[in-house]
Length: 67
Image 1 (tube, rainbow, N blue to C red):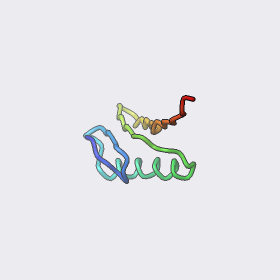
Image 2 (image 1 turned 120 degrees about the vertical axis):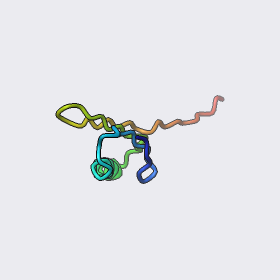
Image 3 (image 1 turned 90 degrees about the vertical axis):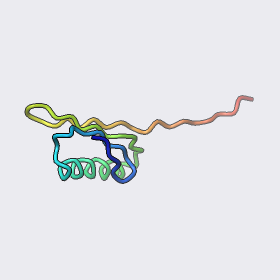
């Protein structure tokens, strides 16, 4: 399941309840905002005993003039 939460793409296992996805994503978004980091996307992968939260930073591109 692919959804957007507060402008951040979230890919989650369809078996996860929507409330759990929202809670986990909002927690990650809040902590990244607190650290002033640019969040690119979140992946929530469920296995038999846990949920793996994979977080990817938004790439930053800087343009440097070639003199």
